[in-house]
Length: 126
Image 1 (cartoon, rainbow, N blue to C red):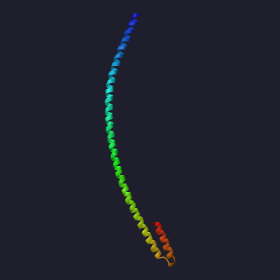
Image 2 (image 1 turned 135 degrees about the horizontal axis):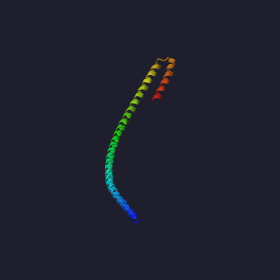
Image 3 (image 1 turned 90 degrees about the vertical axis):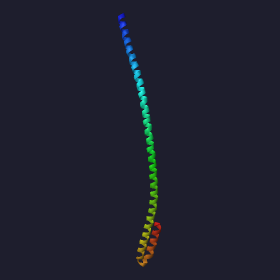
Image 4 (image 1 turned 90 degrees about the horizontal axis):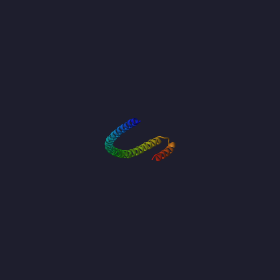
């Protein structure tokens, strides 16, 4: 029986020694991985900071360009509004002239009625 306990003790001692070796190796690997993780984190942080800076610059440039486009469109809208008003007034004048010309060729009995209708139509277009 003493022999069995001696063999058991020797086996446990060998397992304990192997476990201590594994533990030492794991601690060494953990230290290496920790350093590599720190290096990777620092590289990623630098990469992100650089990209965010470039993104901010791009967004700022885009905002400036859109502000310029908006200003140009507002100017064009004002010009078009004036041109549309001018065109409407010219069309009203042509319509008035056409109606007046038609009234002048109407029969004498309907001339007064035609002129009243034309005047009413002209004042509603202005």
